[in-house]
Length: 209
Image (cartoon, rainbow, N blue to C red; front, side):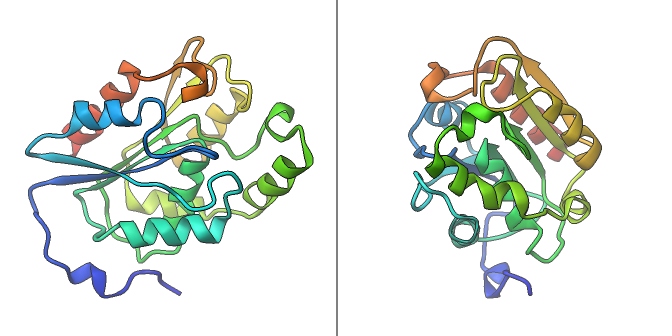
């Protein structure tokens, strides 16, 4: 069943790229590098849209996918997504429920399909993570939306093993970038800006014009 309804037919600016940013588990739209990226990327051609996800300390697939669906007013070649950590999964799980339309691109920062033990070291974390780890994703359908997918990983991420890089290459034909010593690339790691994120998004936008 498609999640897309009449919103497909809303009027929008055909010349502007809309970039929807989905934050991380236990995060907010104002954390870390998110405001910096908005300030860097927004201009007359690009609009980055940040918003808070519900129940962020205990994210649920259905709630997060539903919220993203509410935020997106159109899916077309001017639509791009930036995800951080669990936000990347949210974007994929949203897209697999949509009618297939071409979009501009996907940028995933510290994405994961599996987690290191530190990420689920207590019972609450394990219970929250379990549906995200065990509920499958239709990667072939996600790939139909765009050929422009870039994933950024850190070589010392304490939640995400670098073996995830190969998984995203294989499953999504993603271009991958590895940065050094940035942890989970989050506010907790003091990452309030990262040029590789801006450069990767700029490249996606350039390829989209």
